[in-house]
Length: 435
Image (cartoon, rainbow, N blue to C red; front, side, top):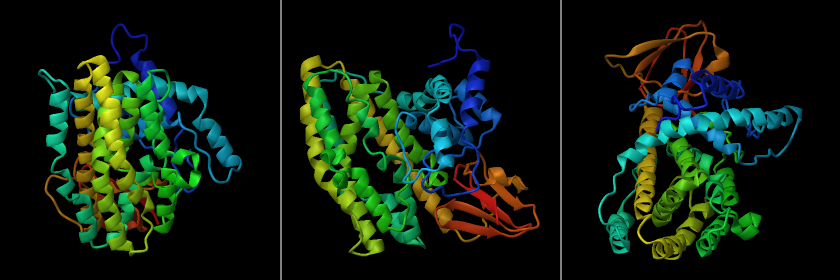
């Protein structure tokens, strides 16, 4: 899908201007971790990344995709309300900027371009053809899930085998923060309107996520308690600089299929995959947390999902998917399958990405490779705190007279002295700052 064409009222220059106008409102920060300020989300970008996103090539560069995910993340979250624990004049000003009408308008202009860039190829990867009906769909789900409860999460295995399991666990939980601290916000986009009994059944799932109005039972509150117990901040996006491309992608995908109601039935397919698989995954996460942090560690968030998602799986299948088929025949079955398979791919990409990031954090020595390029750390300290990825293997050379800190995630920093080098593999998150 090409957003910009000869019939569009948007010109290339107006789109580029909208990108720049939106991005300039997320400037660099001197802090790698930003506590109790949900509006401060620094981004670094190059002009060629914007051009790539607009042109929408089949093969994405790592840098442009990382940038696009962060952009789209912020655009979606301008529809959500964030308030800090404490408000001062600086945060009040940033609050007004984050929700500014002109900035939001610029975001809306570029949103469709970002969605096309990030998700059109994902949709193209899933093909579902043939005489699908309810029986075919139920057999498809059954056969795909029948062995799932015997599988072992590779991400959790890597946490336990890491040289620093606590650090690996903390970074795993941080990847969940973008979604779990605003849990069910994407789902809530689908509750508006009027579409009969199905709407009420979906609302039952939603109110479970929100603890039936009891704040202490709200799922995001349970996750905040878990973060506190692990010694992590519960503030939204404290760990903005540590979010991987793939974890941003999960959050964005849910909003993508929820924001445009043409994708509603894909969302239902994705929801079913989530509810069908989360009980087993959450049981493993709970066990891993206790293995790393002790049997008394806080795990109520994941324990609750082991319990409630078992029922949500049945509710989504029997009270939402089946009634839709009964009411509308087979016309939305392909959408159910696409959403189911797309979300499976999105979750799988995070597992691969996270495992490789832990390996990078665990690596103690500079690794030498042929075919790398070099980047020099200079005095651009205003940009250096912002995380990024590269499109090729690089050697980072400290070209200053002082040491710098290179980070690959939470509690994962290495001191690089003057003229020392650090190998950084392509596609992996990193950042650096002068000491």
